[in-house]
Image 1: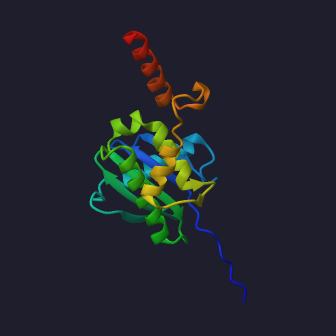
Image 2: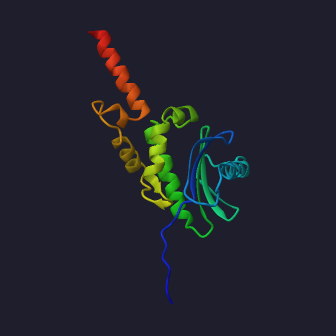
Length: 180
């Protein structure tokens, strides 16, 4: 009898605000082919989980043949979705890694305003955790370290810097100019 070993897969990672609106999302599955289908799924997941108390530790639910692991912190709602035959412990470790990395990157100010101000770091964080649905890393501090290592030094060309880095570089040059 042949055993089929498959790599655990993530269908999406959602970071929503306290009203169910997108802060940062990334889909790795064709289960939601259109943007309106994705928005409807996000609204559905939010409406089914908003009344739960997932603030102290992660919760798990089964919705539309998807396992969803989620956790709420301040005004942010973290969700990881996998298929109904996925290992919940693995999905939970992805959620915890995502949450830990965001906590480190936002310097313990885990709220919507801070997440939006550092959206470049949040999106890089998503890229470091999962690629094409395949889990790359679940260790929060290591994810945060990889994300911050993407920060280029100020001497690199502006085209290779994130918007936040470009602003910091411009501010630095302006300060130097004014102090001369």
